[in-house]
Image 1 (cartoon, rainbow, N blue to C red):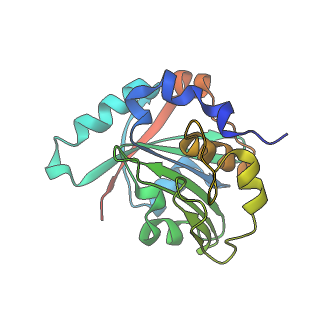
Image 2: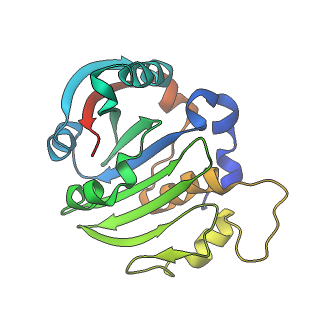
Length: 201
């Protein structure tokens, strides 16, 4: 059964330090080391748990004139999850599309101003992209393929007036629909992440 935005409402409550600004990306069939190579990343020390990742990411902004982004990675089944606190590399087409060569790349981002992006690419082709708060405005080669799924998950369209905006958690649910990978509190808290820093372009 497809998850909905309500199934991810815990994220904002349980992880407020990252929930206000983040980018989560899932890439099929590539290891963290292979992704690091594709993104021209520099290896960094591994970190235990998302709290340590958030602290290290913000500390990174005080270094090297803020020109590198910390990315934490872990393998989940056949997918690799990339997490960027206060980052956006995963939804930057100039980096995401080349890095998606031969694979699937699903990424969603939001920042402190509630500006967001959901991006789905297959083998360097952008299939779907939209702002989760404005899902009626979609582009890519298959902008309507997931329209019914999106509505069922909890994205609000046209004249819908939801009591609570679930656009950000709905992006997690849509990513799970496409990948089968569930982001859970235990995954975020207990994982020792492989880390890299990537130059911001």
